[in-house]
Length: 99
Image (cartoon, rainbow, N blue to C red; front, side):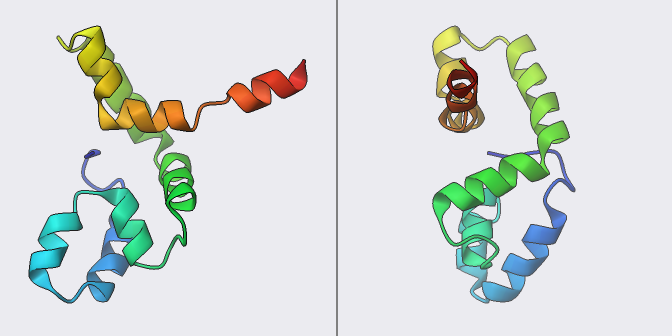
């Protein structure tokens, strides 16, 4: 799942120091969740996903708009990694708790 350049520069810099193996870095550099975990900025997958979502709201919003405007089918749209991540961290709990 890639976001526009510069959206996770701080995280990437920290992970590069942690990952001294260039081959390993090549495998994970485009996965912001893995980068957060391996750099020590998050200790669980849930924490990494939440941190990623909270720190990249504008870039995520732009990408979602691009995905909606794309020629993806509904099924392809629903299987996109970012959409799956957003659905996994939806606000249903908070919506239900208000009632």
